[in-house]
Image (cartoon, rainbow, N blue to C red; front, side, top):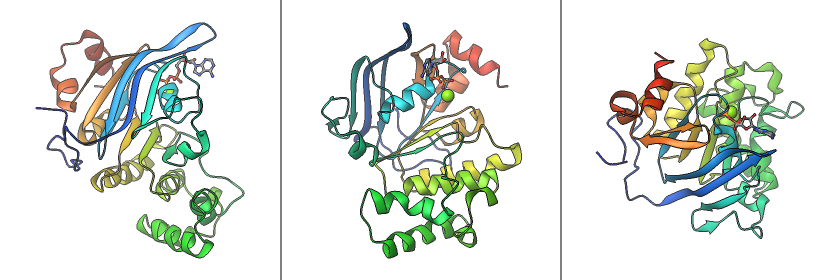
Length: 260
Ligand code: ADP
Ligand code: MG
């Protein structure tokens, strides 16, 4: 089997020759003399869901942050589509507007209504009219069953509802790529499912996703490709079946053994 979609329910339209959306080439990053990313090569193709797994401290968040230009890299190149976004002349704001991001915590602005949260980027960055942005925002909230919460403040929502609102906010501007960093790690276990279901649905709709996750069952079920990061190096990457069932890499096996 190639690097295309498996037969799982998450299978989108990704094909091995789909265009690269994100391409990381030889990425290196140190903090205070410690190299955290040690030459990372990673490509995410259009419509692909790539799960980034690895122990705490292996560099997953740093990797996602470099892709969104929240960390400056020491070496390597980052391409979004055809654009070298690691070029110092690249406009970070313009680039970030092409990428949706959801973190583990504190994604919604507490002082804005849920609807204003969802529409903020389309109004600020993309200059959509308020009417058009709100129409689209309400449609998105309706699609996740939260239309009735549109005028509430985020603290009136459950953690799962907040993360789902954060996800639809991140796609409100139709980004080319969605970066998700352990978006269910802070949730009560009973709220994890509804958030993962939304990610699964986006994947089915063709959204291109790079997600750091500890949800191994989800990665196995939904990701087209899994990348195992070990101490700042891609130790193994391939279809879920390769890593979860047939890995011959002792590091991968040892890491996965902790989850079963
Ligand atoms: P993961 O998301 O896989 O848990 P991180 O990317 O958060 O890993 O962290 C990788 C390593 O980089 C850790 O040792 C962490 O302490 C270190 N690190 C991350 N961000 C910073 C920072 N801003 N300053 C110093 N060290 C950092
Ligand atoms: Mg992290």
